Length: 338
Ligand code: BMA
Image 1: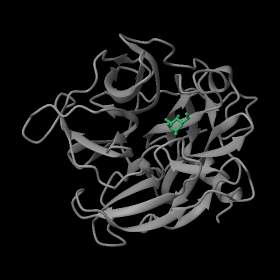
Image 2 (image 1 turned 180 degrees about the vertical axis):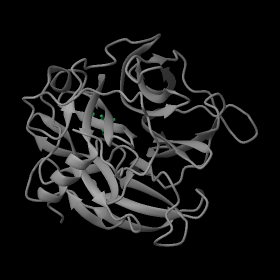
Image 3 (image 1 turned 120 degrees about the vertical axis):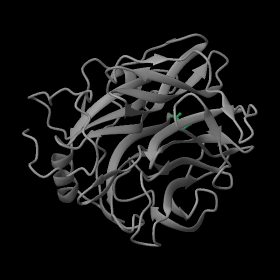
């Protein structure tokens, strides 16, 4: 597909974005990387599995914050770098979080990170221990020193995803955070809510954005925001996961929604069917079978290309691709908002 003349994505150029053209026989709007998975079993040190992880473009290459389940089966966060966004050098030790006084403030556990830049600071959100599942928030300017900030929301909550800029339309230049109120276990329910803050400390004006359900069953049990939303001329493009319950447990798939630019609590379109579900061996077999869980999307504004990073079967890191104009067109024509 030829690049758009007017970019639909409001963002930077990432000329070395990982990319593979859509196979000629592919009928879907999202297609997998042929070299998947890009991170396999036992990748480094005591780490058994890396999945559900976040990556961004940084200084001509890429950096990431990785969910790493150690050989004691506990999850923590590791930092990693890559020249091409595909072959990753993940540090064997966990991120050394500090408090504001520079004292160590390690996680008791951490999983499902998201990573983004707002103004001149990089922020990380993850599922943290409050105690009990809650949203963790931290930041760094240089990927060397990591500040662990206060938890933005009360437990129990997961899938905290910040918007990449202050939003002026609704309340005049506030930060916005999506999350998924939950319980402390393998939550059998969940909807996406939006909260606002003037300073990343005090959060309020909580609103329901999207509920589980609809005519399809793939998102009937729970839903949760995925990668940091991508700003487009049409709205915020949000990839999210939807979960259905089978006699063999949960099945996680990926869909997408378009949220109003000035009021992201308003859903304009939402995929009726999933865009990517567990089909390949690395998605259907692993530590937890049948999981496709996207946590990062890197976009190249001039070409409209999007590379999606997703966790597969709670074991592998995988890549998929789509083209923003084709996806938005698909969304408009195959939407079910409820
Ligand atoms: C969710 C989270 C995810 C995980 C998924 C499937 O509750 O813990 O990290 O991928 O379950 O096990």
